Image 1 (cartoon, each protein chain N blue to C red):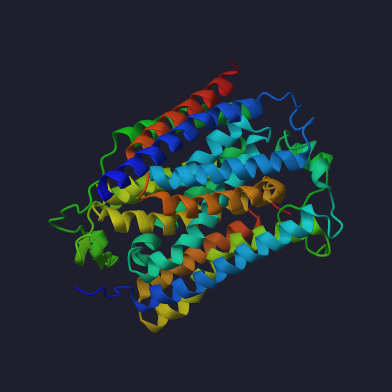
Image 2: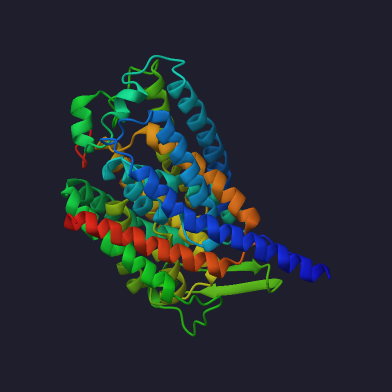
Length: 320
Length: 137
């Protein structure tokens, strides 16, 4: 009886949540359709309030769908709010950075995030992230929109297809990972035992982190969507270690790119702070709802939402 | 099986510094924003001025209104928008503090590879922070 009641409550919550998710783009389109040469008729504080509420909902969705808030923020906010893409990308980096900074300490303490794995990948990733930010801010807006649209659509495809491996089996670690002493042990709460892990294909992983850092800097995206599959599927780190270490890498790479945006004047506290606050609050609520919501359904809707935002950016880039 | 802590000493040092730095960062960000948007202190440009120009590219907005960017806010700490901006600068510098803290820890552990990697990482981030490569002020 209790199980039936719980299932009923979960189903109800999932339906309400799915409805909310479907309303989100509609509400955003309504906000976006206000003829404000770009800001005009609505008071600035109404936009800030809308941004806070919007990022709060994005934060809830991001956790439940298992994606980083940063990757949702840039395509969706740039589609539906009147801010120039420069400021949205600057705010997007800070949203991802603040989330990573606040999540980082407990993950490191538990031994889930691995400092040596992160430092090895972040050094090269942060350099390419700086280059990506400089290229992205120098490009014409339409070109950035076009590339952003293509990238976001690719990300939604990867998210749709990706199948992570909880405990990849590594027969032999490669020479570079041995030299860099990248291996570890963590306590798995699901299996209730210690798990030893090591990695392989380190040179390939390093090459991929150059690309990921570049994209993160160029588009102001938190790059968890790409870090996790590379750690997990390419390098062979366990999924929990991959997710936790990705947060740590993100804090370094996004710091590097954020400084370029700060020096180019592409960070407005007026836009960045409500975004950070909304996303962080939403993430906390999302974490509490995580066990009560049908995550697969939410994840599918988020992937669809991301694809729509990507398509919208693509059309903007093409001038349609 | 009882949960054991498998993080090494350097990692725990980083976690401690990061925990303090991120909590302080959130407090500073909230305080700076309140001072700014409620106009408790004078600002270089009002929120309404910025809203009238936020559809422009960053370079164009900076020609139209004066808002802090890079390091050009030093000497204007009495302004609300500057304090809000400084809180973001602090957040962006947090990772550099944390990494700088673990360099001595790696040296104590006689871990030459990660001493070098961490020093190089700090140099990359400090280099980005100076604004030399991004044409900052």
